Image (cartoon, helix red, strand yellow):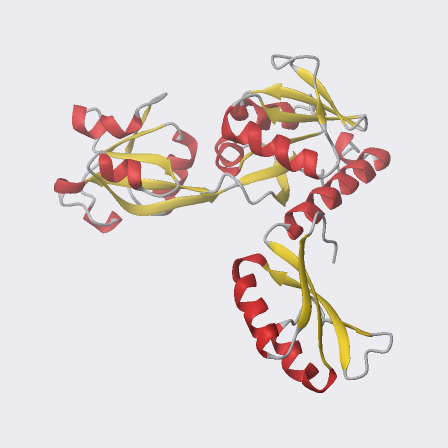
Length: 295
């Protein structure tokens, strides 16, 4: 049984549970405060702080983990992303006071002080940019640092930028794009001893987990469309319903001039798809959700 480290609270915890449940790996814990849980009977979950998950996975206490890529990069541990889970999206940005006159990195003078919860990423970013800075590690309330004179700029996470604007700050550069990832320890080089990451049964189980999660992610934002359409308008229908590799076309019993078409379509524009099918003479149109989608 593989052990997977999951965030113990917050939105990441909720999104992880939803994704795993949709993949058939129901989180079964003895109580809401339990530190471990069964995942569909095939995997074991351990609940720890999101920022500790890179360490747990790198040290072998967990075979895999789900956490933000920003935390993985900050840890500087030998880890690899096995799958982008497409939630928890945010950006690690450099921000300065709106009235401070700094609009880009080129405006930085001397050795400015940078307040951040991500000292390693901050040092690496400014070093790569050829800028000398003083990093001021803080544990929270980063936005207030420039107003208190603790720092000249900050490096912090944002998703919409609204919190920065409310606090009178302006983004001047992006350090990192982040999202929740399924991570594992990096595979050893060919000349290194075989470790847990190369254990074949363990690797096979991890691949099965990746495929299960991939199928759920691929199905999100998609709908399955079925409709009866005129046979002589199939070329036009294919433009409306391209599907993954073209729509499935099925002859109807005693259908005559009509055929059935089935295809996957984007949910965001499904209303346009249905309108176009109707204009092409479509009938009996049915739209359903997709639980899993494997290419």
